[in-house]
Structures are given as C-alpha cells and as structure tokens.
Amino acid sequence: MATGSGVSSPSIVSYLGTSASQSTTLQIPTPAPWLADVQRRLSNSVNAPNAADSSSRWLTGGVAAAANNFFLATSDLLPAAPYLGTSSQGYLVAEFKFAAGAAMTMVFSNTSATALTTIAGQPVQRKIELTAAGIETLRAELSRITADVTREQNGTVDS
Image (tube, rainbow, N blue to C red; front, top):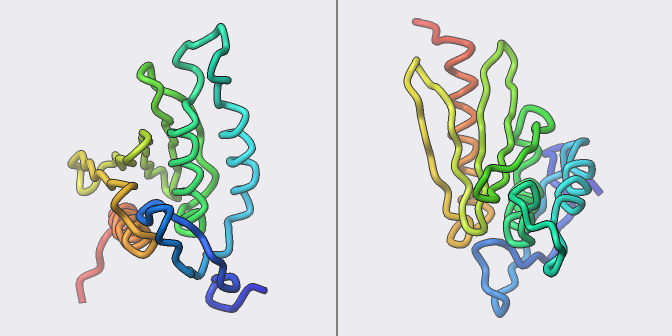
C-alpha cells in the first residue's frame, strides 16, 4: 500500500551495497509509471551467454542488473522514462530529458553509474559506485544531481 510520502510498504531487498549475507529491510519507493517498461526493455537487451551474436548492441546480465536495481531504487527521482542505448564497450546509456531542455546522461557498467550533464555552462561528471552505495546513499546522490540540473534550468532568484 502506497503512502502519501511516495513510499510503498516495507520490503526485504538485497540491494546494491549489501552482500548476499546481509539482507536489509528497506522502504522501496513507489515506482515511476515507466519503470515496468524500462525493466522489460533491459531484460530483452541481454544476450544469451553462448549466443552467436556477441556484438556490443547487447548488454551483459551484470550491466542490466545494475541498471535495473538503480532504476528500481530511483525511478521516482527521475524526470521521465529514459532513452536507452548501448555503447561500443557494452555499457548501458540512458538519457533523461528535463523540462526546459536540460538533459542528463547516465552510463552504467556492472559496478557504477556515471551521470553526465551541464551545470552553469560547465560539463559535470559524477560517478556513483553501485556496489558500495546503499539505497539511501544512492538516492541522496541522485537527488543532489537532479536538484543541480533542475536549479540550473530554472535559474536562481536573488532575495
């Protein structure tokens, strides 16, 4: 049951920053409406381990799992469903469009997500180590990044 705070009832989840022997009871955010579609697209983008086509258009299971966990934990903090693609190295590339034309690109590997954007006319790159970040740390870092992007596009007001 969702609460007014946008957080669903508690669930037990083994998350990015927890080892298999350390399950943690966490409040999982209410997912964005687009999450199920993105999860399906990620699942359909994983190449079978012994498939003849091993081109970089396919994701490894590790990259897909890392991105899926990231989106599960943070979809409510993102502006809309991402445009998804792959890099020539097999990384997942997700581009998010904010209002007023601002954009943020995230690049996912098995162990990290790197946010790329422009703030105050300067390129900004922030790397989040997914294997070390707990859900609260991950959400706090993404909140800081999206707040900076949003603040940049809305400008600042002197008081």
